[in-house]
Structures are given as C-alpha cells and as structure tokens.
Image (cartoon, rainbow, N blue to C red; front, top):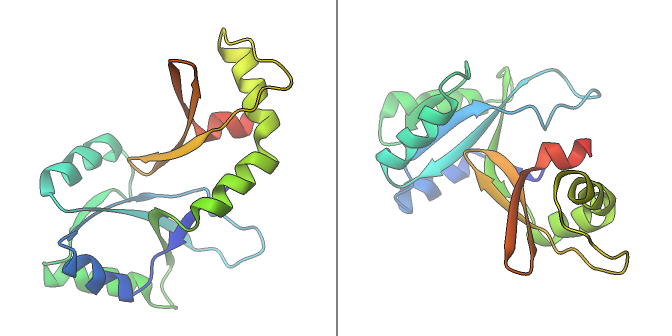
Length: 166
C-alpha cells in the first residue's frame, strides 16, 4: 500500500502556529497500517489557516469517528495533540503533506504505471498507444490522495485507491 504522508512530530506544532496554520482536521487513516508493527490507531491531520476551510473539510469527513477540528491556539486541544504524540499513546499521527514528491513520483512511475494504464483503458474512452508516456501528478483533497491524469485538453481526477485496485 502506498503511504506518502509525513509522520507528524511534536516540533511541527510550533511551526504551524508560526505560519498561522492553527486549525487541524483529524480523520482516520488506513493507508499506514503495517502488519509487522504494534497496533496503533492511525490518524491523519490536515492543516488550515482559516477555520472556514477546516470546517468544510470536517463536513466532508464528519462521519468518521476520529474526525474533529483541532485549534492549536486552544491549550486543551494542543495538550491533546501532545498526548497523542507521546510514544505510549495508542495513536500514530500523520500529516497530510507528501514526504517526498520525487520519491512519490518514482514509486508511481515504477509500481503503478500498469495500474494507471489499466484504469484508463477500462474507465475512459482514451485510446493510448503502448509507446505513449502517461505523466500522472498527485493531489491531496480532504486527506484523500488523488491521481491527476492529463491527455490533450482532458483532465481526469481519480482516487488513488481506485488506481491501486486496477
């Protein structure tokens, strides 16, 4: 399973506050599950500089039992995040930023190029030649990873999990 997001660390809290990105939206995150590691609940955090944007994201994921809006300017919220970051916590936090765009692109090109080609052939009317190179890009929307495919003047946004299944 492709897991491109950064592990959230304690030092990111003050950096986010300095950048005025004090609203975090939390949600469940299943892409990081590792059968060989201790069982922790994985949570994905997405940062926002405006409460309204955080509320829109929250509305999209509010059915998730781990969905919430965290305000880093609220001392109780900040303390809760610090507790969740403690090594003995039952949680493992991820930040919805891609660790390395270069690494993610290489992994997509190597591991998922056939999946992308199969997806295109099965779910679109695009007829691509075997020699045609497909150059996907990544996009994160409400904590969900999407692949953006472009061909001519057409653009297709596909959930990454659909590409993994293709």
